[in-house]
Length: 466
Ligand code: EPZ
Image 1 (cartoon, rainbow, N blue to C red):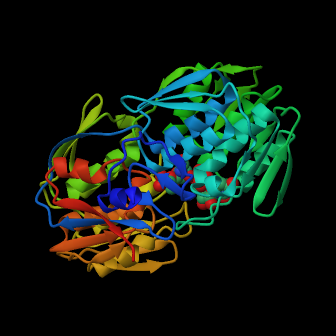
Image 2 (image 1 turned 120 degrees about the vertical axis):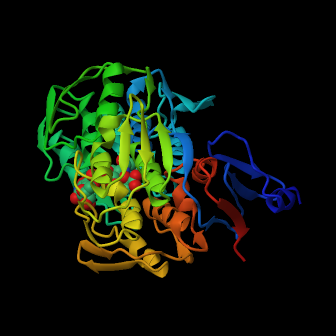
């Protein structure tokens, strides 16, 4: 009865954004309550976003801490004896999932005010990450390196693939094996054991972000020196390394393709502020451009935005860089451009869908080549439902700009595709309805609220699925 009332009025729980599981003995109904929706056995509430054609966005927004820095840093906190204070930790579904997994493993996590998370990993009770927790998000696999280094063994559900690709983990496992871990796989799990990891020289066939992070974390407590060659150089790697060094790790070369780590006996908790989210910033840059608006985007690291800013300027959009903010002014005519996604400092794959939405309405032919993931064009069919003229040839999309696109019912297939459809809805004629909007919550906190503060006509509907 109580639950029906709560469900009916979609009572928003302010239990912090941590995932709490309550059991009601009288009806043995297991209910999971999060800040966004109530999921009861047999009935699922779905999120839709409705967008009306929006005039030029104007005003300013503040970017949150980076999802792709917060996730590895939360995993890395497992390495420390004692508490870490992580400031500017974004309130995202993926961060919630990672906190839930860490709580399962043993650490004590507290959500403090102002997006600060305190995590104390003095006690790690478990070394296994179960399917129902680890399968929620690929980044759960990042606990493997810290658990192997701290506990000497770990058993993790294999991360599934996702909409954008198979997402293999062979490079992660190659690194752990080189450091002396015994790896076995079976029944959907991978197990790794090593009494004590030994430093090794590891060459990554591809500069994988996740593999660089996992191996880097494991190497911090290994015996001797580890050299990671052809390492990823993304800003999130540097932020992780800075956190590890603040905990007492001995790391040189993070942010270059050769990272040297000399293992230490123990790491201690510390206070760290997560870097701003360059992809959230880039998404709002495109939102400003697609509505020919003028917006100041605050809390950015301009160096992290270089590939995005350069491409914007090539299109003809005026970008003014200040210390910790940028001003986007998109009044002029745009020019079509070619984009090829590459590892940092190349153009980020996580901005590909958003730029495709923009190029859909730029007169002329634009070519976008996706070199990182094998299936990251799921948004194309949805944009075409809105009238975009896009042809896919293998890993390349050829976009013929149209005068206007029109609102339609479309579906978010992954978080960046979902964000791209929101941007398309801002400029489309009429109303756009985006289903599966929960994907967006994985990478953007209060996305609609921030857009509304800039003048967007957008709202979210939580509906029960009959
Ligand atoms: C990270 O994913 C990001 N996620 C992704 O962001 C981002 O798109 C990606 O890096 C590339 O920049 C997080 O940081 C949580 P990879 P990750 O390992 O680590 C191949 C978003 O939207 N590969 O660099 O999984 C793989 O198949 C998300 O925020 C192997 O072959 O990316 C892919 O083709 C999406 N073997 C390429 O490398 C491996 O062992 C890039 O993967 C690992 C990866």
